[in-house]
Length: 164
Image (cartoon, rainbow, N blue to C red; front, top):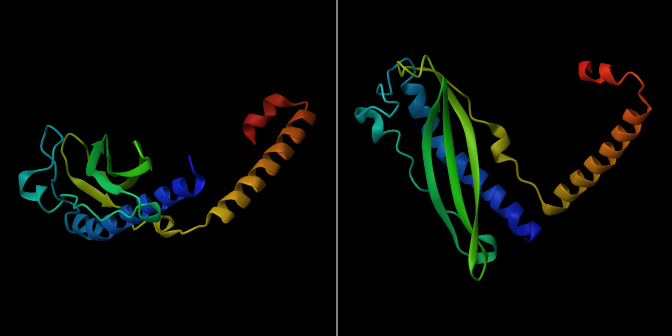
């Protein structure tokens, strides 16, 4: 796949997630301490509309097709997650999906369904980068990885590596 298209998709799904969080987090903060889930783990009817994830316009790469595929809150154990998936055109006959899963809060207990904590907005979602920057970071990563392997090959006390 074209690297520029892949990077565009990743940045775009982050932008969409960011937009949704800017709307959702203040609503969740208002509900802090409230029971928001039924015993079966679904959102209480009185909060269902308030916490419904509204679709956001997705921009395709160079005017290609793109679509907001789905967005929802998921609850696992004591955690509240926002899950977003966007669809992008790969070529004439196929598409691909990019997703984010963002931790947004804590439940007192999943079985009781009370919202205990709400996270602050994750600023890393607003990071914008270029393909050139990413390729430079990948190059640096590769060089550091080679250096690490060289150093590791010289270490005799291999068991001690797990404590570093």
